[in-house]
Amino acid sequence: MRIARIAGVILIGMAGSTGMAQQPQTSRVSLPGFSIALPPGAVIEDSKNPAGGSHKRLISESALAGIPHLEEPEVTVLWLTRSLTYEEFRDQMLPAVVSMQPKKIEGAILHDEQFSAGRFLALFGRKDMIIGFGVVNCPVELGIGLVLRLHSSQDAQLEAMRDLVKSVRCAREPVAPLRPRAAVHLPDGFGGVVDANLQRYRSLDGEALTIIATEGNAFGGNDVVSGERLFEAAVGAVNQMERGKPLKPEWVRVVVQPERTDLRPTMLARLDVPGDSHPVYFGGIHCAGPDLGILAKIDLKRDDDALAGRRLAQLGCPDDPTREPPEFTKVAEQACRSGDARGCDAAR
Image 1 (tube, one colour):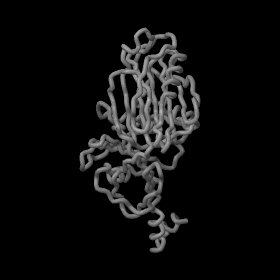
Image 2 (cartoon, helix red, strand yellow; image 1 turned 90 degrees about the vertical axis):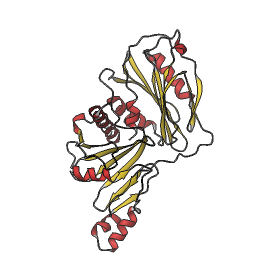
Image 3 (cartoon, helix red, strand yellow; image 1 turned 90 degrees about the horizontal axis):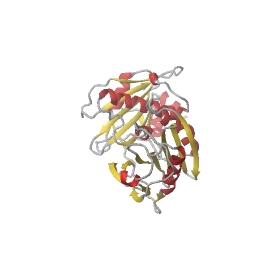
């Protein structure tokens, strides 16, 4: 679900110029679990959270003296606790990221390649507005995303992206980062599902919740309307990646929610795909203290906006008190022993 964060930084409004494939000088920057060679510039975003963060800088004009380039060139580095295969990058993430771009730069995927084992890159956009996008996998499930806005020449941009991807050095002795977990207060009948990457729960009634904590605010628009549009686009991109086929924007809409008792910003959206028997809900909570977004996929197996809202209200931030349920297999077995047919069905 962190694709929302990745796609959100690949937005551009720049004029371009063409030129030779000359590149700016770089210096090595250390980030959690890896280092990378970046050109000098003003750092406008910097996080040291090992479980997921970003480093963004505007590339200095002095570093680009004599090098034709786009206006306001910048580079963004993101990391999260998940790796990708080349097929996932090429067939799922890349089309989803491209689909979220504004009309001024919407265009085709111009190039993609597996640069080396665990390292992939792509160019997309228009001939005069090219975005570089790359992924590097490091040990212990660390995925690094790279976004470059620099050249309008495709050859120059491709060379710059290859240099950027090649420059990533994974830590020699990596330590698996501790993934933040949402606080939960789910009713009886729910149980936890063992998953190395995600926080998951099931209920005897067939409900399923999948939760992930991601750095930043996934619906942090400048106002309520822009925040809703950003969240709707993120939900669409996540599901397009998951389903492997395009989704129409009108299939996603925000569901108005009452204010939380803890007053935290929250948002709920539903996805109604024609032909599906029921909608799937997606909720978000912004935790201001650690600046985390709690994102939840809520599958109720039925159409019920009010219940989806209650499930979202039963989730909290990592520092909140929590009531973690037992594993679902134990919940199902206990229910079956008590004569509850739902538990027997689930335990099969």
